[in-house]
Image 1 (cartoon, rainbow, N blue to C red):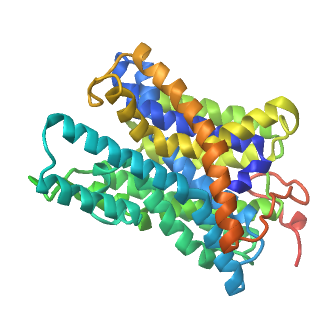
Image 2: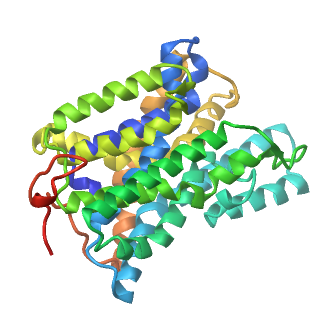
Length: 391
């Protein structure tokens, strides 16, 4: 998400969220039950953070989408940003499947046809629209299927929210967070099987709530938050809000996934993410120097880290002659995490950046708009009417 390049604090938060997802996938089962396992077991929430942040930074990065050429350039930028590394991860995962199968025997017709279907749906970014499909091919890429839908809806949402006033924006933001809470409560209200006994076995709740359209409220929350930011509704003391948000997140994530104040614990995470993004967007604690450059670099490589984690995990253990499906100890997993970060940095510098530049140069993409600081500061989230910008 190039718009976050101008906000080091947001870039660092994006990297932390990506690492949280990695810990959720590969470290939570290696920890004894307790507080630390609860923290690692909450890493999946980083994806919800990504969805909110995606809407936020896309608005800040977009100048105008009123003309067909502007819309064309927007989609070229999105494709250039996500698809090259996505295809690299796709190829690596397919290679892992072939190597695993060849170790156990010859390639069968069933193996080829089955994985051709899963691979094609993943390559076309439609896997999350089909029940039980996303889990069979580089499963972290399910979120990119959702992001593709977000990108398709963004021009309309961008135009619709452009002239909304503060009160409308606050009301819509509250409505989106309520919808997320309702969906979360439904998800934990049952586990009704869908396509049981087949390779696509899942549950109705997971399928319905995993649909890209079901994730749209998170994305809209980020868009609306960015509109509020542009109208001057920002956090007055960002440092205090950041500390408060981190304390609340710690309290929620360190405990088990239980009910909190009558709602599932996960229902409280998106509102905290919204407040945290609003605070991080206005902080100026690390705008210059080595700290800022380090934060920005970590944020830039977080996408490669996220999408390459599954194929690199398989390649890492296959190269050692071990089974990727086994639970390994923390001491065995930590070298992989370090390797993943190093590979992600190399992929960003030597593959992601050059291919992104090449695609934009050959197919257009136009200049990107850097995030702008708000015109003035107001209390968050309910500013006084008399101090709102006019016009």
